[in-house]
Image (tube, rainbow, N blue to C red):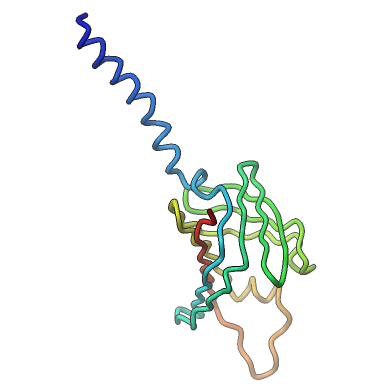
Length: 156
């Protein structure tokens, strides 16, 4: 084999070895790792968009490779575990919280993540809300579904 052929073969081997590492780095399970700053909260109630809630960017969430997370906001600190169900959803368990009613809650979160943006989407049905929230006042009606999208930006 000539030196130019050896060089090209070496380059091909290096590129082939690096390709899986590059693809792996783009996986949601890798992209989600690190600290994220909370920037907004979008809600849809029974399919109708509600007013977006801007945040003061003082809240953050940290996802660790060991399957744990920590959420810090001016009103609460909570933490727990997560495990991926597939590439778009994870199971989220709260193990500690300043709000006692949250401890032990398990939910499924839809995840949309890129290098700089994270969206955590929670869908709550009326039956789920009936289990965790106080009864509605007489004459009021609980929605059939609430979709909450928490938007985060990577915290450098």
